[in-house]
Amino acid sequence: MGVGAEQSWDAIILGAGAAGMMCAAVAGQRGRCVLLVDHADAPGKKILISGGGRCNFTNIHTAADRYLSANPHFAKSALGRYSAQDFLALVERHGIAWHEKRLGQLFCDGSARQIVAMLQSECDAGGVTMALGMAVTDIDHGDGLYRVRMGEQDHRAPALVLATGGPSIPKMGASGFAYDVARHFGLSVVQPRPALVPFTLGPDDALFQALSGVSADVSARWGKTRFREAALFTHRGLSGPAMLQISSYWQHRTPIQVDFLPDRGADWLLEEKRARPRMQLRKLLAQALPERLADALLERAGAQGELGALSDKALRQLGERLADWPFTPTGTEGYAKAEVTVGGIATAGLSSRTMEAAKVPGLYAIGEAVDVTGWLGGYNFQWAWASGWAAGQAI
Image (tube, rainbow, N blue to C red):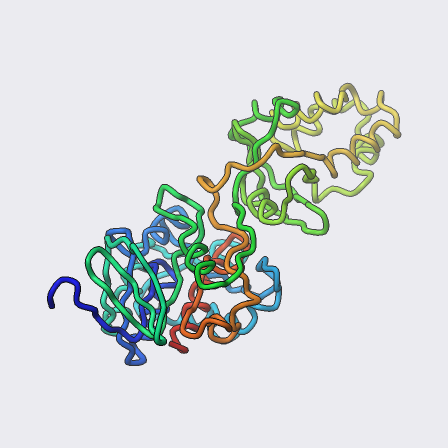
């Protein structure tokens, strides 16, 4: 085929990540002639670094209420039609060993490379053509066809799928490309922001930055949203699963409340005082929390001495403070450290059944590019599989 000649496809999918590969495999196996395009030189690069290289590929507790979106009901259709059990069946069909870690999180026993190889094999079974290491230089639409230019080559298809994700982890090549294309075709975009991302703390909380590396099981709350998991102090601020989860909901200049002793009753300090009046407060708290954290909290609260020497009122106030300790982050570590992005292509303009744009026939958006963001723990992968499957059935 000569340079400059147009090549025709049934569908062109931009982005060879989790959602794009799933969509390509499903459409290809339905007999569609599919071109899967990515500027990276290999598919599934973000999959490879996920879950510490083990890929937390789904969560058995998947439900629409564990996703953030301007339309909380949008994800129900796709998630209901392609479930965590459906993806697990695919994993088992490929002989990939897996285990449940905690909270319904499923991981490969071996490596995330197994998931990428599985998706590659499914794409091969569908006769999918991959164009890797290719930058898209132009996209337009006319006569019912989308034209995608890469280098000197034009490709055209009646269906174009946006699966290039959001701007989180830019060092992996992530960008807001999908949003730009969506806006070009008149779709609206919900303001994106980093999610599942560590917080930064200011000089007021310098005391806690000295605790870098210390973690504790806490209950973190923002508004009515609460997560019971580990929090980790870093040299820049707060991280760990509880904080990453809350970060998806958090809004700037608002406090996060942390319960450092979520298993203790409201009057536990008074009960300890009655039982062990000679016990040093510092020693008691160091039995319940990491010692350095206990010291920092007591230093900030200005409390010390034997339990018997402290008034009931002082102990009650300390108990209340430890159960509802406010932190007001100065910000987050941004897209560089964010696992995913909240916001994206507005669901109001998409069909929840097919992921097709209502006003732009043949244009689809799937995965992280869409304004659907899951909790930590395999939920975002399940959205990628489900939305990719839905579009793959439709194109």
